Structure formats: C-alpha cells, structure tokens
Length: 430
Image (cartoon, rainbow, N blue to C red; front, side, top):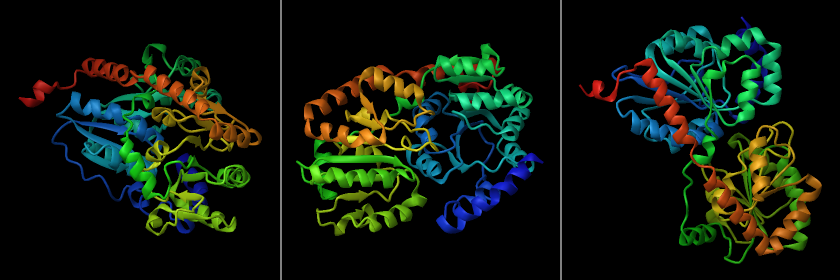
C-alpha cells in the first residue's frame, strides 16, 4: 500500500519530466514491467543492479572479473536511469542482458524474479528495494551489497524506522562497504557485524581509457581548440551550477580571453535548458553535435552527447566537477580527473563523497573552494603551469595507490559462492 501511495505522490513530477523533458520516454514501459525481460534459464544468472551512471561506472571492473571467474553464468545488468542504462550497454558489452529494474511493486517483481531465477544478486552502493530483495531471497539467491555506503542522514532515517531497516538489511548475506566509517554506521542501525567487510571503493579500480598525445591533439583540433589554448572542463553539472559557473567565467574571460570551456551537464534531458541559458547570456558557443560548423572562436562547447566526459578531462588543463556547488546533490566522483593528471576543483557541497574529499585533500590532488573563491583559484592555476603540474602528479600518485577494491570484493563474493554451494564451473561444463 505504501508503494502505491508513493507512486501516486510521485506521478505529477514524473509526468512533468515525461512530457516536458522527455526523461522517461524510453524507459517507462520497461519500468512498468511490460518489456525487457526475455531471458532464458539455460544457465545460472548473476544479476548486478547499478541504479544510475555513477554506480554503473563503479561496477565495470567487478562485472568484468565476475564474467571471467564464472564464464558459464549469464550476467544481467539492471539500471533505473536512462543514463545508467546507456552507460551499461556501452561499458559492459560482455553482459548477456541490459535491462531496466521495474518499479518495486510485488506483482511486477515476483513475475520477473521467477522468470529470471537469479543465483546471485549484487546491489551497488545504496539502492535498496524491499520487494526485489525479499523475492530474490525467497527464490534462493544470495544477496550482496558492493561498494556500500551509508550517509549520516540516511543512517539517521534508518534508525528512526528501525523496524523496517532491520527487516531490509537482514536480507543481505554479505555487505562489502567502502570504509570503516560506513561499516560503523551499518552496525549502528543493526546490521550484523560478521556480514560486513571493508573492501574499499570500486570506483578507484575502473579502467580509464587513455588517449595518446596524437589522440589529444586530434580531438582538440576537432573541437576547434588550438594547441596553446587553455581548456577548462566543467563535468557533471546540475542546475543552477551552469548559471553560476558561466557568470564566473564571463569575469574570468576578461583576464584570460582565450580560455575555452567544455561544459558537460550530468543529465541529457537538461541539454535544451542549458542551451536556452547560453543563448540568454549571448555567449559564443556550439553544441558538440554541431561541431563541424565551428569557427574556432567559441567560448563554450556544450557536450550534448553521452560517454564523453573522460575524453574531455584529457583535453583539459583544469577540471571542475559539478554536483558540488548545489546542496541538492552532494558531489560526484572527484577522482576521475586525477586519473589523467588534471587538477580537480570542487565546491563545498560534498556530503555524499566525504571519503573522496579527505583523500584529495590529504594528497593535495585538488582544491575545494566556495563560489566566491573559485575565480581567483582558477586564475592562479591557469597562469601558473607548475602548480597545475604538481597537483596533477599528486592526483596520479593518489589513484595508483588506492587500487585493489575489485580484487577484495571478488574474493568475498567467491567465498560466499562456496558457502552457498552453488554449482561449480566444472559441474556446469559436465
């Protein structure tokens, strides 16, 4: 009954995004359970659920290792958001199935779980759905949380609704969490300590594609950026960050007029909204999809395509990671630019990524700034290449030192497989 009530309350917002922004036009029928689960039971199934873009990127390396370790198991990747689904299809082509997880209504989920009969269900980070978890357990699946995290705010809510949280988290057979702080929070809300394992952050083990020097030159030329021109990439931006950052840049362009800004909004349904703002500000700008019409004099390149953020970071001198200048989001993965030796700048609203903030600060691999400090910090970094180089090298050293979470997580899952006495690879071959 509570889910039906939530669905009714959420309907106006969903309809607004559906008709005005086109946000759910591709995924709605799948999420209602009408399409998307034409799946055989010929081989046992491993189901990985990664709700959106960030979680999908986090499980890439683990999914690849699971496929290699259990080659006779089918691999299913489910998403909730359309950006997450697109990323899963792009980055996890070796998976047998890419689907949307339907709304967590009992009658929808029950039919799908019986049809798919998963042997192992892996949930990434913090997307907990009671019916989905309960019904997969009833069908005999092992249930695992990977890259688990629990914010202070969420922990407080779970403590208030203790009767629900105990029921929910008792379904897990194993919880692999990012750090000891998150482990303590899970224990504090009643999760059995023996089920908890600190395995690190999976996002640090992702394989980051690297352009050659020739590739960087070719892409800059394609975008109309000269070799000596400074480049700032603004990644994963949200409303109203674009407005704040562009207005700051208009001041910065008075000091550094040849600066090129690459703007990569987090959600594709907002492209038109960002275009309208750029037009209103009367900037020289161009969409990436129209890049063949470039003049080379554009101040802003709007990336209106998916899967290009990491390439943009490689073309840049400095990266700003969005979601950190608005209280509604709480930050994104500020380590991504570090993989390419780029100094990373981020705002004060990083409450969902506190561990990453501590790592960046300790390694001196980036700078956290207020809106008021941002312009001055960018001026210093753009003028002094030696400071940029030092911060970038600190970032490279940091990310190399943090690898290993995938290996630790895989080992705990392998131990669980043995505990559940699932069919071995040799048995399946026979």
